[in-house]
Amino acid sequence: MVEPIRGYGVTARRAARGPAGFRLAESEAPAHAAAIAPMAGLGMGVPPPALTPAERDATAARRGQALLQELTGLQAGLLAGQLPESALRRLAALAEGEAGHDPALRELVGGIALRARITLARLGR
Picture 1 (cartoon, helix red, strand yellow):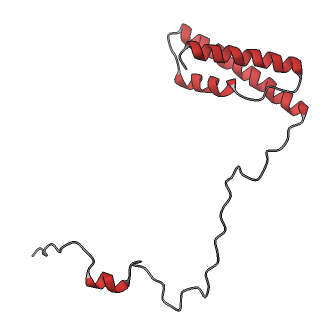
Picture 2: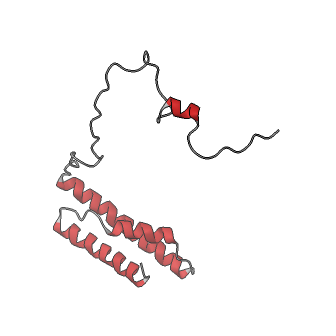
């Protein structure tokens, strides 16, 4: 036999347990509760390590090379009639970043990044 449907609300047995529904026995409960300290965000309070000028230049040079590779790959894709969305996302991410310490390198990488941003704008990105 199927049991009848009960009305909504708290049953007597559930009401006797209390609102939480789960309780430790008094012998298992901790003697005192420790305060929980607020957790700082991962990026808060710790500054990023400072890069030396040589490290900044190396990072900028790698970024410039990666930009050129992505632009070349995008050009080949367009000539083949394809416009891969992943290549556009990579190009957009590379267009922003470290410019380097050396003024000549900064100008060179800045020009490549500008070319990438112009290409993205022409493609409506």
